[in-house]
Image 1 (cartoon, helix red, strand yellow):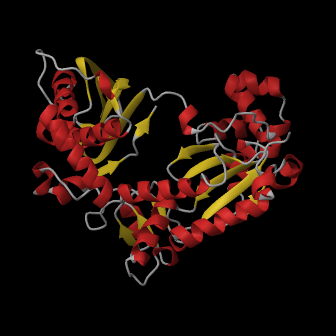
Image 2 (cartoon, rainbow, N blue to C red):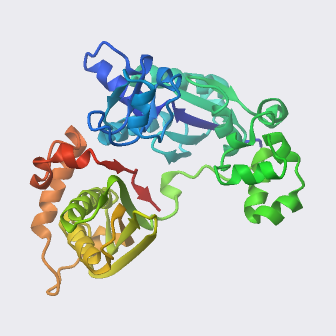
Length: 411
C-alpha cells in the first residue's frame, strides 16, 4: 500500500502567532501585513531576526540577521519581542487539531510536523479533501495559516510544502518529481546546507535534478554515507516512518545556550546568564518529569574556541537552584578567564523524577521544588514574565536585551 503523508508547517510561525494573539486582544494592525519582525530589542538594536513578515522580506530582511542590520534596511520596521510561552501554546493547539485526523503524528519542531494518513481514507475521506479541511480549520480556529505538503513519504511531503507559500496545499508525488522538484536549485533540497552546497556546485551539481542523476559511487566517494542520503532525497526516496511522541527515542539530554552581543568578561554577568539558562533547562526537566544526574556547561570564547566541562551528581536533580549551583561550580573550575560570547547549560544522564532521594551529603531542595512547581504553573498559564527573580528585576532590559536566546535543545 502506498503511504499518504502530510507535512504541516506554520507560515512564519513566531510572527504569525504573535500577530494572531494581538488581533484577538483588539489590535487593529495585523503584523503580517506590514514590515515587521520578531526579534530582540529594537531600542538597544540587539538581537537577531527570528521571524519576518512578507512585506519585510521585500526589503531584503532575512531570518538570523542582526536587528541593527534589518533596521538599516527598513527604518520603519516594527520589532516585537519573542514570547515563547505563547508559541508553545499555539503549537499544542495545532497538534491537538491534527490528532483529530490520525494517531500517527510526529512533531518535527515547534511549528511543523508529519501526519500519517495512510488507511484513514475510509473513515475521513480523500487525502486532499482532509488536508484542505485541516488547513482551513487551523486558519479559522487558531487565526494563523499553514502550508500542507502531501505525498507518499516524509521527504517529498516536506519538500512539497516548500514549493509555494504561504497558506498553500501542495502535492509532490513520485510522478511529479521531474516537473516540480528537479528544476529547483540544489540548495533548496532538505539537508543541503551552506557547507554542502559549494561542494556540490564544484562537482557541477546545480539543481536537484543534477544531484538525482549524479553517479552514486562518486557522491559516496565525496560525502560517504551522507552522499547516499542526498541522492535518495533528490530522487524522492525515503522509507522512514512517522514516529509518534510516545514511540520516539528516549530523551538523553536537555540543554539551552545563549549568544551575547558583547564579551562576557566577569563572573557576575556569567552567573546571571547561567541562572537564566538553568531556569529554562530545569523547567523543561520538570515538564518531562525527568531529573539529571549530570550537569554540563559549554563555553565559546570570543575567538570561537569551544569547550565544555561536566559534573556527575551524587543525587539526581530537577530543581532550578540545584542546576544553577552546579553550573556555577563548573564555571568556576573550568573558565579560562578569556572573554566569552556563548554559554550553555545541559542536563544529562536523565532518569524519571521518582529517582530523587534525600542524601546527607547534599542540600535538601524539597522546599525549593515546591516553589519551582508554583512558578512553573504560573508561567505556563500567564506567561514567562509573570514571576521573575529579583536578580533580573532591576536591569532586565539592560541584561536580557543583550542576549540572543536559542531554542531549547532536547536530544
